[in-house]
Length: 341
Image (cartoon, rainbow, N blue to C red; front, side, top):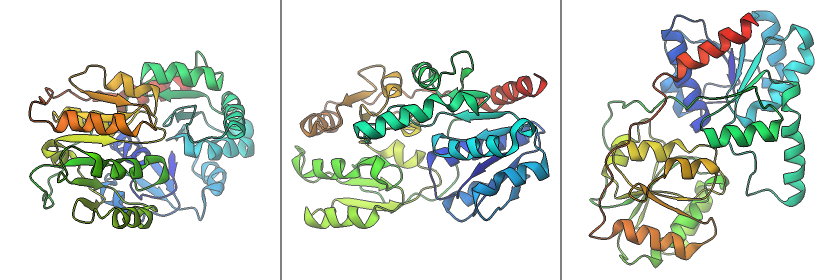
């Protein structure tokens, strides 16, 4: 059993559905407990997935008691509170819980007090989780130390993006691309503010994603007079074709876990520019011909990096194969080991 709040289009839920598809293909029974199946990712629900819809995720312990799954998969940091609640309510009758560390243990948006509280919360994860999964070696080391779960942490990357046949939106011949939810974490304001400072005053920005910050982003676009240079195209079920045509993909987040959009862009030979939003960024942009990493609040460095990749002499990198083709099977091996134990 796994669980989620909704299907609005976050990377956590998208990876969760890809894993569920793999588990189903392996002949396992998979149940998704979800408050509402509304959202763009509803189109990606795999055939054979059993869905239960509690009115709220706080009711998950009752669902687990009724359906008796062999294991519970918590898909990301946002959902570990529900895992703790489920363990507290069910006690020794709770099946093993495996959680994925989807965001970095240390978040740049936290104040000193919030950081201390968050570290205290992470330090207690070993009391209600049986195992922790991170997506890269560096994030696994970081997560194991933060959660005090050394020896109970594995490295399993997310499953790779799968191309989906779809019509391409109308795109300019040359553009910068951003892909992600329109939420504060992604800090699209940084990327939009960089546009007027670029050497080429005409290159447009295309953003694929939807979210609660759309109104604020549209207001910034109007204020800067960039209505003809920023295209907000909404959620995309398959961003790979748009990535393949972009000159550069930019990720200007305040914090991340292991940003899949960087790997997806590199898989189609598109260079990337990213803020230093997690330790995993340097694991992905591990060569200068793949892209550049800039400090989160260094606006000048962001402009310089974008200019470099937009320049006439910039060479696109060779495509980099995404890891994770066997991720669903690796999770199942871990689940089976925990259940037997």
